[in-house]
Length: 399
Image (tube, rainbow, N blue to C red; front, side):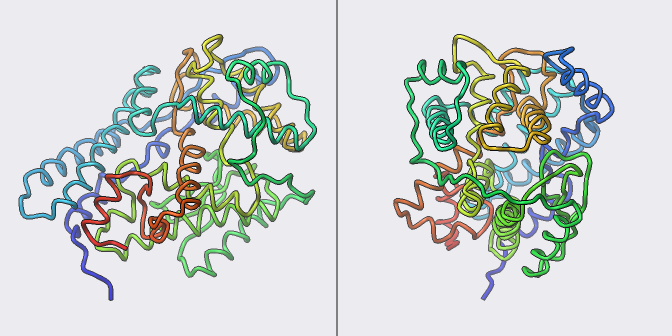
């Protein structure tokens, strides 16, 4: 029997003006970026100037609504303390996203980095070592000779090839699905799960993305994947992200349908773990490694856009990505890591890309323990490695 929601009124307020994701607003100026990409690939510039179209009026509206809800929550003495804590953490996290978006509009790259660290965390040298060790292991599996730069990094961090963190297997040669076939693949998966969503091709997204506002799976118009990769992406997007969303709507804490504060590391960690279990792909190692290099964890050098692009290109060559995809994939990888910044400030990056590999490791450790937390991974959008989240769920008897 479904329990009555404890946060019904607050959740309605939250949905009406407080619910948003920062990346929904970090939209590249497509025309300007197309020209920057052309100049970059021609070798005429090394650091593209990144331009965005951020709806700052909408962001200001979110800020006002969040502050209003914050006052309502803090002044309500009759609410369950665990529910109050859940909303306090969520509002704080959302306000950090507001600060991030305001900094992007001001072109304050350092503030962008600091705000993103508040939301997604900062680089960790030990996790970076594990990402590097996994990459060296995959290079050995492919008999791929990495460049001297990779060897310099391995020597400096005293890292050797180690595949114990990953479930990697070189992919079989397969034909790529057409965009129409990929759309149909996701439509079929949604029908099988009885989820009333649409699938749309969208030129403004870099990767396959869920839009909860539009109730749509958004697919980049240039996306190329094999059937195996498509199946793994369905596991990631539908069987984890959407499953947790709908399970959260059935829980006594409706906030679980959109995520507790700073839930995303656990969310993406679980989704990445489940995806890599199917396609045996790399679980966000290059995302983590690139961000660390940009932010100066290798003190001999802070890597700029061109240098990260070259490392990414070599990484995709190692994985056997087709030549026609390598330049585009490397460009998109850099755009993801530098997004939010102008691309012109050494040491500044958007740290969201850290959560995939760090979250994956956290989930993997729980599964291998095994930890009883595994039993409720799918009850909603929370981070099973976050003690505040665990305490909230325990206090509300959410199993």
